[in-house]
Length: 199
Image 1 (cartoon, rainbow, N blue to C red):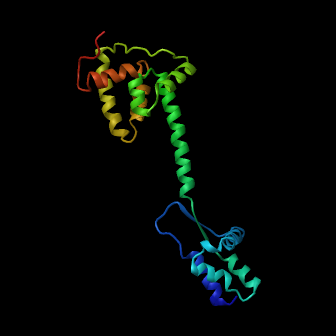
Image 2: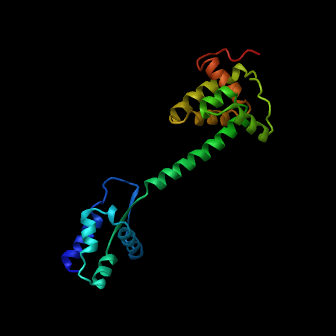
Image 3: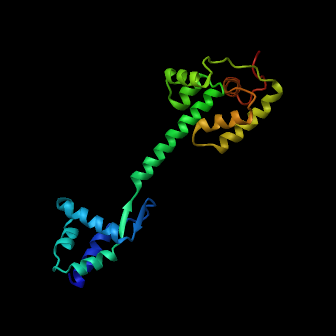
């Protein structure tokens, strides 16, 4: 393989260098380069004309080809791995958030809105958590309402992505009240209401 051919190999392998894709990494590893070249040779029909020419028009110098591979840079697109990881993380978050909301006495209407969950799934988790029966909202004293409304306004500004995060944060700040009671004063009574819940 002459110098011109060696450059053709490098150009062919690097011609797909992406710009602005944070999921693409460059790998300078002879072992990985050899594996990639071997894989390409096994699939000649899938090669572009430039790469096919670079890999097949050799002058028989294995030493020159090996030297070219030593300096070869492989670009790997990890987008599919990133997406898989994000999906797994989202699934894990949903499971934990759903169980937390159920344990904090969220009623089914709110759970369905936040998690698109079925009654059977909610019932199963309630049983696992020892909260088999959905409880009714309890009265929240008028003296607590302004603090709850103020906290809710701040939380809505802080968490603007997932609504479930807002309710979880509110439940953590007012841990002595169930989510069904908090939801009632926020949604049914209204954030600007001073009435509170009727006992």
